[in-house]
Image 1 (tube, protein in one colour):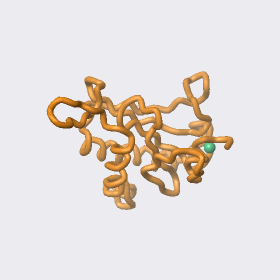
Image 2 (spheres, protein in one colour):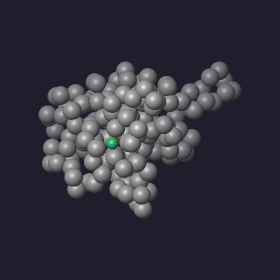
Image 3 (cartoon, rainbow, N blue to C red):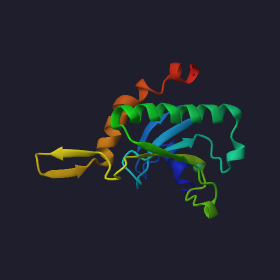
Length: 150
Ligand SMILES: [Zn+2]
């Protein structure tokens, strides 16, 4: 496979699919190696390599999607802050040559959100649990009405 994100887009069964949302312009996946719990990547459907290649419609749509995910994460996890970013090119820290934005919720302590099991064990919430929560809720936030009404 030439491009891992094109493979994810195409639901290639050779890659672990962590897609939580998809429309005609973009799709959203959980980072397999998250910097923090619920570290998301917003990826263009088109295989673009440069920010300058984005159309006006794509810029608006993708940024609106990021706003929608923030509303969702605010409700689900109430992070204290966010990093929103794009690394274009290997020399800028870009690891994949397919344009994508990172949305990284920050929790202050960076212990992340936790599930308390019993009274003594504390476990970080894993990818599967995060994915399940996002799958169940994301379409309440990212839907046609949301994208049309700012
Ligand atoms: Zn690609």
